[in-house]
Amino acid sequence: MSWLLSGMAFRIWHDLGFQRDLKENVLPTMEQFRSPSELRRRIYWGGYAADKIFALYLGRPADMYDDHTDVSAAVPRPHIPVFDNFIVEHGLTHLREPIPPSPRLILTLHQLVRLSSIIHHILKRILATKYDQQSVDNAMVVSEFNARLLKFYDDLPPEMRYNKSAPATTLLTPRVAALHIIYHAARLSLNKRFIWSATQTTAAKLSFNPREQLEAIQACVESIDAIVALAASFSAQYDGLSCAPLVLVHTALIAVNIVVACSNVNCNTDSTLRHTSSELQAFGIPLYIILQEMATSWKLAAEAATRLGALFQIKKGSAFEASHPPINGSHMAPGSWQDPSVAIASVSSSVEDNEWASFMQDFELQYGLEGFDILFPTM
Image (cartoon, rainbow, N blue to C red; front, side, top):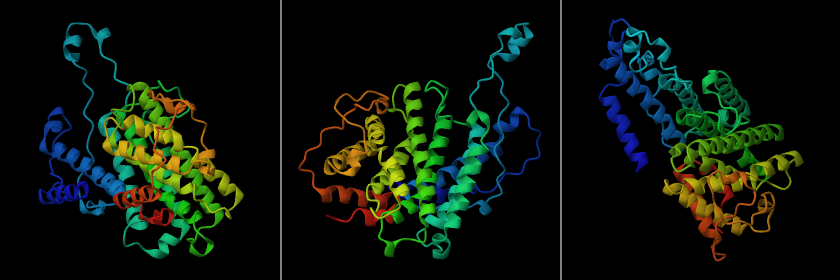
């Protein structure tokens, strides 16, 4: 349904002409920010970013292209604190409201648009249904996009950066958190092909060598680690993850898919590759708990947490379970993924393997991860 409705919305968007800018020769006064032109710009660029997010998470082809518009970038409004004029007129300037330290909304939107443009090119060149096989098999293309994503991350303004080593109480606004979550979702989606390759036999492998696979898996380790840290900070500042944005649910599911894929890494692969893959598997418990905390608000998170718990039961005694910390408790408190004693919800031992396989296949089709179908054959 999301696929259908989003596609209809973007077609209506074009019919209404939002991709065309209204040319107005006016000075940048406060009145301009109430003008139809500025409102249309904000609507257009918000829709442009939403189009790429829908395409990334749902596997739907993007509808809005960079060269199909002449809309200028949205302009931030001047910061005019409430009652500022009154305070100045009455000689009370010492009571002026300080400018908040969080980044301006439109400036965050500008960065999201930059990221969305990179995501669009990744989708079009690597993850599209009808792709250029020659470019897909060439790992240089993947390296190129990894470099573009890293440059985007390094170029973020200081107020939009996130330091996972900082205390969890360090200010993290929801919009900055969402920007970083989408960034890591793009990075995981780009590099998951290497993990798929590492789980196959030599004859079925894509044209990626062990070094390239290792770099990609290390990128996934870094991104999933950052996602867990972001969730911890968000939970600490907003009393849990019940109000977390939906993009965190979808990104956690991409991460779960990669973690599960790493449990199938070919035993004949390079020892360093196997070790790095085991690092990824160690994120299974934190991701499970993150999904559990979001389950009260998002049905998708609740279903995924239940299925992931079932997988833990299915793989009892395997290397997958051995890579996780011991579990013996039963309480699931906000932020409890930092507690290694947290328990997996009880799952009946009668859970059938093919139920999990069916769930994963449905999940792959829904979220454009059909490249992983070889990992979850019907049992």
